[in-house]
Length: 301
Image 1 (tube, rainbow, N blue to C red):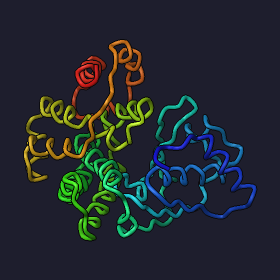
Image 2 (tube, rainbow, N blue to C red):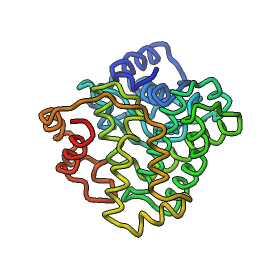
Image 3 (cartoon, one colour):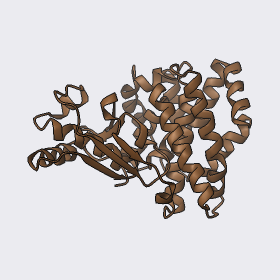
Image 4 (cartoon, rainbow, N blue to C red):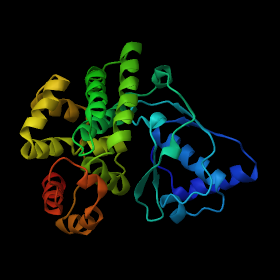
């Protein structure tokens, strides 16, 4: 499973689990598989629940116990209260609820050793997105910022190594996996900012893997937050141990070339989805629809 499954599939699986009187749910795989397992656990405990009730968090019964085994390094879903699925409108839609925490999570970086470079980068750069967006969230606190900084410091060398086409040894795989968990712990407190939600558009319409799609907008976010609070941004670079130019260079080195061409009309059609959007408003900066319009036109038109 490479991208978020439709919620309808989770409903079907959950009802089958309820009919079979399943007592717990095990999720094995990357973030999409783990997010799906969380949703299946909800529907298994609430087989009459529909999509609307699921997203409204109207769950009569708590989800079944969940065990999660991560096999990629990026989402940190093993330790988050988040599930991201594709809704009936074919849009990525996330929910956040304490009842989605796993009863037990098995975190072993050896499960990631077989990941090819493309997967290592597409998942790994999601760590940078989680950690950076969390740091620049209005909800960030001292603890979440500590998770963010440590995640970036741990991820930097493995990602630079992978971006250079070199093999990651066991120690670098461990660092990248641990950074993924730390990034997950950071967004548990803060959620994400506009790069994640605008990135959903690239995934839904152009099949761009989630990590790449989110990280594509990190350079713009960093420029935006620097203009909003230069002192806060400077503290970020001091803590991660590099300046903005070097950090943006690391992010871009992990990204593929995007063969995406948007017309101005397509951008205008997409803009309403970001009106009063939680992730957009969560950003420690003023991010207007005009800003998003000009950003998308500048990048893809």
